Image (cartoon, rainbow, N blue to C red; front, side):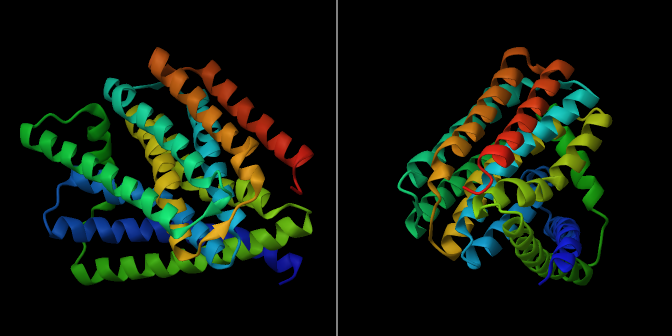
Length: 328
């Protein structure tokens, strides 16, 4: 691969990743509806996972190619970008109101999950047993979400956040025949694999040519690229006034990244980790999460000033990474 091809293939790979994730969600939602699964459950599971599919595919591919630092860097970078960059931009466009249930449940869960990686990674190794632990926690969390949703479906108490989720499901549900849904799922999976391979290979090539370490490549180039679905979804949701969908998408994506993306990468291939990923970069991710939770929880409203602070925090972190630690 030469530089020209790498520059062409990187955006091509990202576009394939994003479109493939959308095809996968469309097909999966349609199949789920054929089996009469509740739209709310579909939204909380399939659609929610869809925005994290590019991160999953990119990190699995990075781990398979023995770029473990890139896989973990992608998770950290995506989490920071989601809350500071995407959340900040959305709040600047239009202040975001935070629902009471999100303050009580989702925000504390987000912060706790962000802290879970420290005991798993502090020994600078991600083993298969570590990955299994994270996967079990993810399964338990999803079980709780499904159980709570089923209770609300039975009692008919659907909150504003879930109404937004139902509206999002409607955009994917188009009453397709089963064979077409299966074709979309297959195309989505193939596209995710192919797009992830193009993205990771070209990003690593460009990054190394620019003197970036594998960790920094994951923290920056790949993380920003794989966060584009969240940016698109959240900006559109904010403009339409679907605040709970916007904030829920960011929280859900970060929880999925931390638990599902790291665990699947570790199951594919255990790997050692650059010490920087248990140092400054990890604590920046935790700090940004804490800042986001504090802003959202205290006022239940992310105002434009808070959006500017979040965006400035992201710019400051990127400056630190590129100026002071690009090759570490």
